[in-house]
Length: 187
Image 1 (cartoon, rainbow, N blue to C red):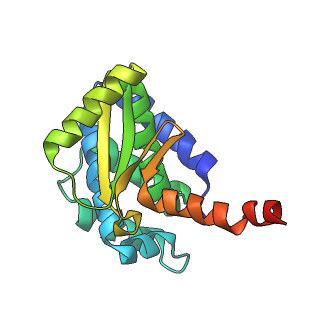
Image 2 (cartoon, rainbow, N blue to C red; image 1 turned 180 degrees about the vertical axis):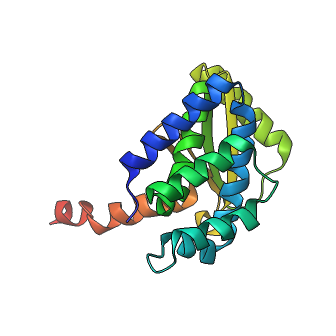
């Protein structure tokens, strides 16, 4: 079972080490690669979490996957995780590392959900407006499409939610009609 507290501590240690060695950007690139690997292959994550597979086999498989694609700090870190029996927490450690990297660099992640794909000019206008309204200097916009929204958008950042979707409007109208106060006033 993944432990987020442990993942956060390992990620913090890796951020500190990479900063000390002046290789934070390289380790960040390695973590993005590992995030893509763990996201693309459920079998790889299951292998990491399997108690049946021995540590030396896991080390050999991970070496084959990341052979020459990660730096020495990341490779040594993965070896440390395997030696400590924490390889099952690797996906959570990767996510925690990326979060801490963004905090160190002052990057704010903004999630935009729309009913249809939005072109880049609208995204740029949204980012510039968000920077002006919030005072953020660095914004990374992640967009996804959810046709259930029907129209409008949902914007999420720093525990804030702006829901300007038609789906929400329809739910609000449905809620108003379900508690129809007008019928009681007629009698």
